[in-house]
Amino acid sequence: MYILIPAASTFVSFFQVAESVPLLPFVDVFYLFCSEDDSPPPMDPSEVEFLAEKEPVTIIPNFSLDKVYLIGGDLGPFNPGLPVDVPLWMAINLKHRQKCRIIPPEWMDIEKLEEIRDRERREDTFTPMPSPYYMELTQLLLNHASDNIPKADEIRTLIKDTWDTRIAKLRLSADSFVKEQEAHAKLDNLTLMEINTIGTFFTESLNHMYKLRANLQPREEGQSQDY
Image (cartoon, rainbow, N blue to C red; front, side, top):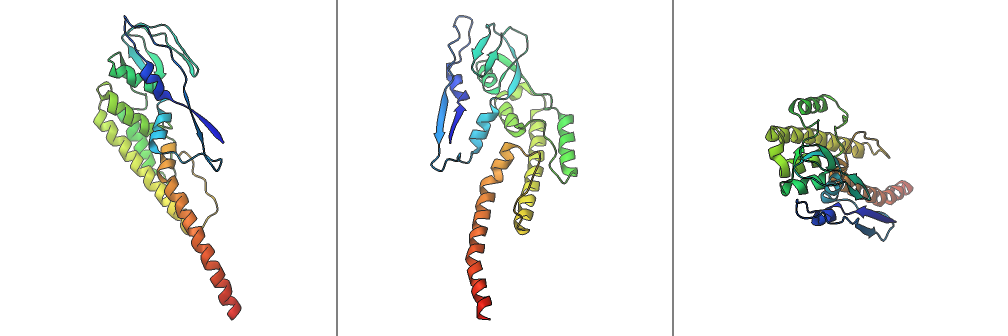
């Protein structure tokens, strides 16, 4: 199986914005991965964060630029003081160049996050999150644009509390699944990063249990024949 993944970070090295410097052309670059067993390798957290960087965010630019045409979609035009949606990777790059101000997502609000945290604690099941990349977006925005996010420390704490609650639920679900020797299970409203956090450990645990049961089965059959 061949998997094509757009390298969004490649754009960053090409992106230059200034009144006297023209915008360099954008080129879509893809990395090609191929595994020997025709199955994609497990993702690590950095790869999940890479996918989160494609999420759109709103910025307030302080420069003028015509529309930019990309394979993934058109961006702009950019006008000083007028909001425009761009991928997160571009917003962070412009922020580092002091070319924009990032507007935090609507859900990145103290009252809304407190409600999400409290609902997650009340419910036994996983509740829907405001974004499939809520943890990654929070970390990236707070690490690179905390001055644009009101009450950044409180937001970080609320997101961490919600994350800890959901991971605790996930561990309990995995423990129950293994103890009851179930063949399959369904968990709704999990994000990719949450699945990635426990996925490798969970599958390796099931593989070890299968091997142990396979080794014990012949002995049990042999003992029953002796009697």
